[in-house]
Amino acid sequence: MVRINGNRDTAEVTGDSRLKVEASAHNPASIAAEKQDAYAVPFEQDAGAVTADFFYLKNTNSKNLFIYRLKMYTPTLDNEVDIVIGVTGSPTAGTAIVPVNLYAGGKAADVACEGKDGDMALTGGKKLTRLLLDKDFVGEQVWHFEAPIILPPDTSMVLHCIIDPTADIDGTLYFFFESVGR
View 1 (cartoon, rainbow, N blue to C red):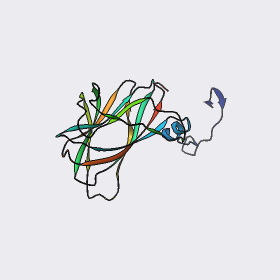
View 2 (cartoon, helix red, strand yellow; view 1 turned 45 degrees about the vertical axis):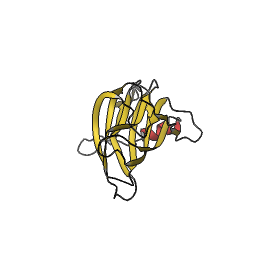
View 3 (cartoon, one colour; view 1 turned 60 degrees about the horizontal axis):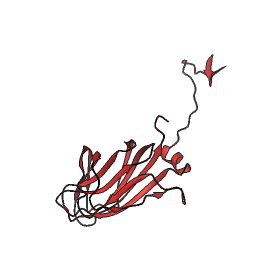
View 4 (cartoon, rainbow, N blue to C red; view 1 turned 120 degrees about the vertical axis):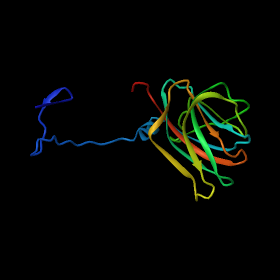
């Protein structure tokens, strides 16, 4: 006998004593989209300085923010971009970017998001990863984060250009919210 949802029930077992199970997996981003809590942030920036924090995102929601995909493209120069989490300070002279809800007509995202053709002069944080942008790559380069990048409430991150400040960098960052502790 096994307990299923607290009730005693029977289950099928294979000849070698393995439990037969039917299961399904659900994409958390899809579930969040149905709840009007999944977003895309398109951006177009020139870094414009020797090294530059050209894209800024801060979670101002009471839920965790999960970044699950990033697409970027550079038509001009090869470049490297660091994802830095836990930065502090306020962006210097950035331009507000409004995320788009993946549920058409859905609610606005509880985030602060800015871009700048130049450095926003944020400090601290830890480099999570470095991404290579290849100008000769046909189309956008896409990074799927199998374990999403998680920004807890009141946590910030930047995309930081480290090679060539004159490179055009276009992209889209995808994220969703999920309750802390589910």
